[in-house]
Image (cartoon, rainbow, N blue to C red; front, side, top):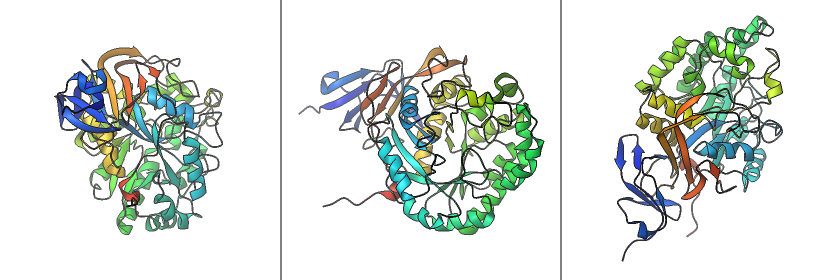
Length: 447
């Protein structure tokens, strides 16, 4: 008897970290059930992907969606919709909301808020403090938790564990890989006096290279001392990459599109506060080093650190302007433009945005186009040229540092567990996102 499927993606080029192959993909019950060549009559729905590339669903493993407490900047619904429009199928959301996600009850609250409102699949970080170390083991075992987040340097919000004793206590309290914002709070506090009123160029003076390097050096020492795994977020310096190259036993590494695309001093001259983020966008030599590390395999993950603020906040003179930029919707077009410009291969992009997150975080059933995995796909037109505009971006803040950016490569469909969520620039299914599952928190099934 002829097999029947819910959906067949036909005539596209299926991309994995190791191969690009002109094959069809068959989906049933939200899962990939066959890869090969199939007749359209075998499926309830057929998607003709002629001329298109079918990627494993892009995962953005660092976003700040601002809910609860800061919904005037962003919320779970608006930012997840922005993600889906940009070809992103899953997001991991940060704990520095108001109140912060520092208790099991607050994590449950976020999961409840997401139900029926988020268009993409999702997970949430538990935020570490000096006071909640005893809760972190319980939180990291909760369904829908992607791990523990530690701020060693202050950023947006009030989460901060800046001392070696505090960081060590957090690492000893948990078993999963913890994610770190690695800047040295002691040095940041000492250098705050160097901020020049109205001069965003001084941001890279205040939060200098040594603030990042000294913190990451301390963090690696503590990870080895405790025998724990760490994920070092948004690396911005050449010097850190040298340290992390020799620390693959304990540390995985993330970089951002902003640090790979924008460089000082030009970005501050053009964008002023709209280029301000932590750690800062630095000079060209650092960007060049990040690209070398990315293509040498030192970098494990690319994520956006999507962190919107209201336009009027970003217009304040430095240092009153807050740090953070939106980026989840522009993620795929920006990185595909780099692919088309020869900065990385399409296979490496897949490794960094699906297979890499799957490996680093232990995601169950996502991150690959393979039988038995969730039918999550980011379908892209590599040849399509579009100009990124503020009108196109649907983050609640209403702006992007990439307004006017001429992109080559564009997401044309977002498919999550076999369902079209975005197709040809339109949202086709709302609120269907579900919590991401992780290998380390799988619950036994009743028999």
